[in-house]
Length: 76
View 1 (cartoon, rainbow, N blue to C red):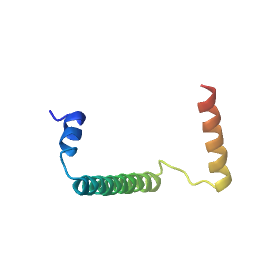
View 2: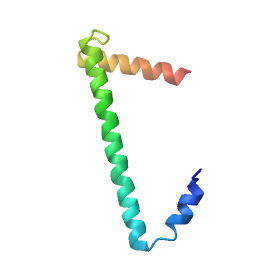
View 3: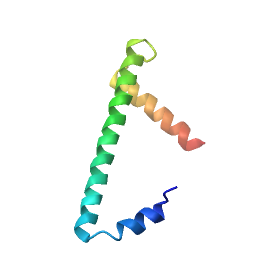
View 4: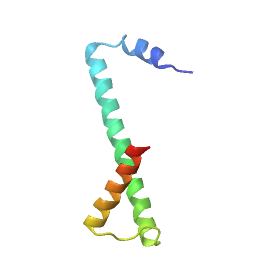
């Protein structure tokens, strides 16, 4: 099994330029992965809305629900 310590040990053996490239590559991959997660969540939300699992709300209703949720979360 590869551990974080092992990866860091190997990365430290790279030149500074290679380490910078590695950081850039990982940052880009993380950005791509996060975009994919957001797109997937959006598709699921749209499907839930179209199937009637979610209701349409005005901005005032959405803000009120959010405030209620946050107040309940803070009280727990």
